[in-house]
Length: 540
Ligand code: ADP
Ligand code: MG
Image (tube, rainbow, N blue to C red; front, side):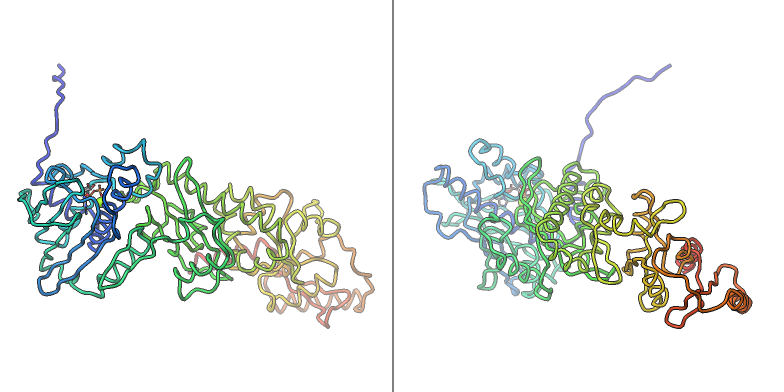
């Protein structure tokens, strides 16, 4: 017998859910200020828009947001002269959790506005973050509408509130937070200043605190590239990273479809450092700082870049795993990779010399990209450069061409000789060069991985370190083999070394024509060396 099936409605008790929202909405309590200030900015931007549609005929005045700290009264107040709320609107937008007035506004005016970008909120939860730090929250507000009554709403964080008429005469809203005893750390000027500098730095409406404006309302990423000079980009870089070295070059991102994204990515000088500075890209949503943990939005290899990405399409108040699976995040990821590859390709094609000069700084980054992203490799294979011990650069194709004549082994595989340590392998390099072979300088931290990747990606190419027992297996066109040592001397010398070394993994060869008075060369086969390197790595 089967039981009967039942359908029904799960009931949610607000008394239970409210404390959960308060506690877990954001792990970081300082976010309350970001939420309240961005609501205040929204209120001013909405009024600006209403005015531009002709729905508001009054004076806009100087639209602004003011944050005030009163240490004695233990309050933090966020005030604005934006649209304000009527008592009805408070009931609708504040009392109904997750009923966002911002989405309501956008929905209502969606045909009129092509500038959705101006409004920040759309989750309808941000306001409640006030209760993470306040034991009581007061809203005193007056709507921009003609003849609107002002209203006061008070709530202590339970599900009960009080809504009464108020005395406010000016349009706009004051949100007064009565800070709870366990959050008094926020009753501190320097702390608030730091939080505002972090989150409000580029908000579109002036935000005042302690008599000063804390933000730049028109950061350059919101402007058109055509209106910007190199100096604008450099000075914005200094604004973001006052301690940073001048960037090598930059990309201005600007796309509306299939997602909306603007931003500027800078290529810093990376050099041979794997401990590169991560978390240097800042993520914004409509000019509100969100995070500098851009892990899932920006491909891993691009985390070496610096700069700003601003997208209202990145879901912000959700978990990391959701972010990873999010389709617009994936698209954004692909878009950024493509843009970066195109920019590099462009530089390579238009200014080969400049590209070569920068290569030591960006090589690590390009190689990392090749290792981690197949699409990037597809583009990068035409511009990634190999540098030889003479300091000459060649693309993969050029290099193939260059060594084709005499760096083939008996299987007709091209052997790319390289050194991972110029000083240590100096005698081997000299010996190879003397025979007319070319030696690559691959001494970057990432190069052993890069070499493996190239061997997989390129056909009939093998990398051998100069101290591998390779040289005598290559086509030798360089030398006349006039011997200084007799055949007999050479055999004796070799036997002697073999005995002393007593190590089967090392090969001893005696040069017929000693180079730099170094007649004996001890080498280790490439595969043995790589195995040893691996063992050493995993043994640590
Ligand atoms: P969201 O900003 O995502 O819409 P919030 O919880 O932050 O959600 O805010 C809820 C709503 O309350 C807003 O959409 C807006 O309608 C209203 N509101 C909040 N703060 C203000 C303010 N300073 N001025 C006018 N309306 C406000
Ligand atoms: Mg909000």
